[in-house]
Structure formats: C-alpha cells, structure tokens
Amino acid sequence: MKVENVMNDEVIVMRENEQVGHARNLMLKHGFSRVVVVDAERRPIGMVTEKDLSQKMKGNGPEWKNRPIDKISIRRAMTENLITTDPSANVTSVVELMIKNGISSVPVVDEEGLAGIVTKTDLIKFYNDKYQGKWKVSDLMSNQMVTVNENHSIAHVISVMENNNVSKIIVIRDNEAVGIITPENISFAYVEDPETGVSVEKIYFIRNSNGRDKKNVKMVSMLTAGDIMKNHLIKIDKEEDAAKAAAIMLHEGVSGLPVVEDDEVVGIITKTDLIRGIQ
Image 1 (cartoon, rainbow, N blue to C red):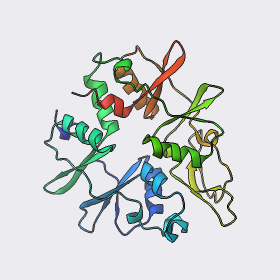
Image 2 (cartoon, rainbow, N blue to C red):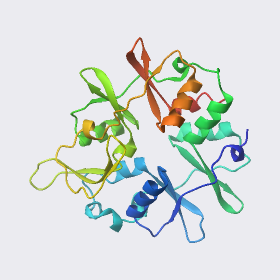
Image 3 (spheres, rainbow, N blue to C red):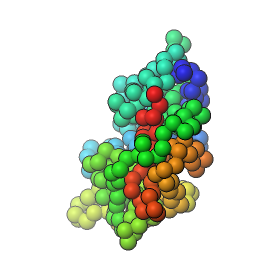
Image 4 (spheres, rainbow, N blue to C red):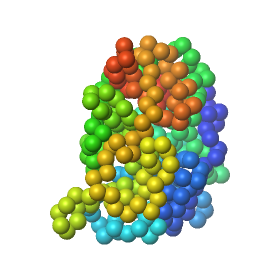
C-alpha cells in the first residue's frame, strides 16, 4: 500500500512569522494536535505539536518564556529539519520513520510542495481496515506503565513524561487506574520558580477532564493530575483483537488504552504499539 492511499490531504499550516498563540487557536478550531509551519513559498520548514508546546513552553529559561503566547514566535516552539516522505513510498516505510525517530506524523511532499500528511491516526485507520484478526492486544501492548498519583502536580507530571520519554501517563487513586493524561491536557502549561522560591504552575491554557477549555487562567497554585486528567477511562482486555483497540481509539478519539487481565491493569496499548503491527 502506498502513502498516497492513506495520507490526509487536509493539512493545517501557518506562516513562519506567526506566533504560538495562532498555533494554539488553529489546534482548537480544527481539532488537530499539530500544525505544519511553511515559508513564504508554502514549503514546509517545521512543525509544532501539542507535545512541543507542553515541553518547550515550560520551566525557567530565557526571558521570552515569560511573554504571553501571542507574543512568542512559532520558531521558538517548532521542530525544524522535518522528516518527510513522498506519495509513492510504501506505508511500512512511514511506520519505520515514525518509530525510529519517535514522531507521530510525517508530511508528504511531492514536486509541487506539501501534498498531505500521514499521522498515527491515519495508520490506525489503515490497521483497522487491513489487520483484523492479525494480532491480539497482548502481542503488541507495552507491559510497562508509567503512572502518577492523582494528587501529583503538573510539574511532576511533565517531568515524568520527559524522564520516561512517554506521552501518556495513567493516573492512579488507591492503586486503581482512574484517568489518563496526554500532552493535549497540558499543552500550554509551564512551571516557573518565582523569586520567592515558591513553586507554582503558570497556565495559559489547559483542557480539563470533560474536554472543555479553561481560558484566561493566569496562575494556578499546585494544579494536580486529577484536575486535568481524562477520567472517562476506557480499558481493553489483553485477549481482544488488537484491531478492536484501533477501532476504540478512532471512535473515542484517544491514543492509548489501559490493558486489563481479570479487571487488573497490566499494561497499555498505544497508537505506536499498534502501528508496529503493520508489516
């Protein structure tokens, strides 16, 4: 199967001279988690994702991080040196690019420029269509879960994500999984240590547990994992067809599912795990 058969030709783009606030607005308006940055000739030169924003906009550092997001150039947050593919490439080559480089999307470029994009969601649709009955959830799942307590601060959540190089964290209450946090939940949150030495979270934008936006939030002290987690936790049995996991992810708009055995959480299956099954 060729890339042109699975790619999405609807690509959200912004100019290189625009601001982080514009990227945020585009993501909210279109429901996408990434924006391709183009130059004056509309050639792709970078990309910004929710994960980029959650990581690059946090913490102490240069003075520009203290500015409002509508005053910060997208060049500060975007990833440069894009990895691209062409429409005639094989789908498996895109899977290899994503896994090898730890990325979730690959722009598709032809002789005329940006032609489309392939995301993990596009590949999950392909998996759901073509790989029914091929693998069980247990064949592809990750046995190691990264967890936080519901009372851990956002500062801790971001640190755990970075230290473990994961984008999904299970939230635990009394040894039971009660929620999940992904970069979309903390995309415009960052942490600073003020001159007083007191740790606080400075939030420009977060998405709360029921999906509605919290706007105009300037400073929240000790905001916790439980405040922003997605608490409608959908689980799947390890013996189910992995294609069922793909179908649930597509229907529910989630990128990972806790895996259970006899009602006990034993792992997690993500989009990345599923696309490894495309061979």
